[in-house]
Image 1: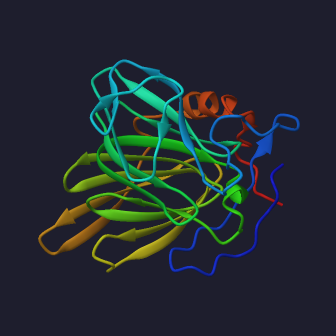
Image 2 (image 1 turned 90 degrees about the vertical axis):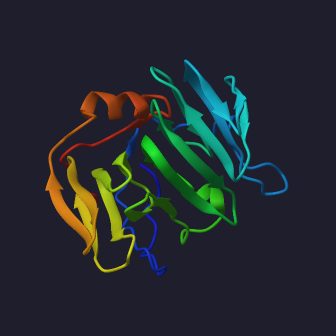
Length: 228
């Protein structure tokens, strides 16, 4: 089990619910910090056409902070950083990824990403969280399993698969902490009068997909089991 961090004091609060690891995972060679404290994100798997800053990518390529990652039809890639942290950039996606000690920000312009963030101590503090930005909402995430899809320029689907995600409409008019032990989803729909939040079902992904991602980093998702 990963170490349970303290309560966040940053604006976008995301409570941590630990995941169960399959044994004692050794730190991965790819995506670890180097001696200078640099956080390196690395493409550890891909299929189809994937580009980083418009250059065709290959497995093993680094993803420097601020890189634009894009995928074509029937294409995706998996990016790891630290040990036990992974996210998948799904097909037909455009996202800008800024992963470093000074920046933990992912912007999804179109398409979808799904992720397991289970060991963010690589950043050297328990007070760090990722911000996932879309055209209609912002999510604050730590130690969480989640799926986010920009369905169109005005609609974002967000599923807290396991853990807690702080969710806030892009205009700042509404916010909520969403905790789930087995998927809880909403749609953020931008309208002329503001952003509407609508409960949603389990779309675009399932247990098997998330479990398969967890296997890549030796993490088991304890569905239905609250953290201790």
